[in-house]
Image (tube, rainbow, N blue to C red):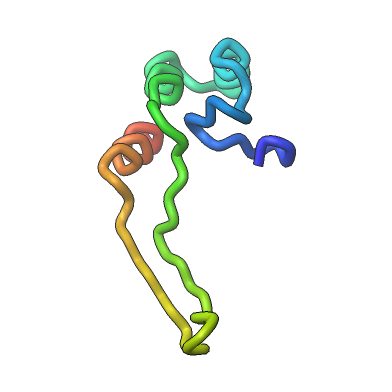
Length: 81
């Protein structure tokens, strides 16, 4: 995703360094509280709320749903203010 200009929050492997993130967030108008929340997130913010696919053997459509984990709910809420 980084190569498309869409880095994943908390991605320490492919994402930019923390100092680069801080600079980009400040240039983007984020306040210091939001920047702190973003840079302290301890994992990649990846979650599949819903997955759909055809089962390869049964040839039936499969659907799986799962609500956001509490840490992702928190960051969505905190950054939506």
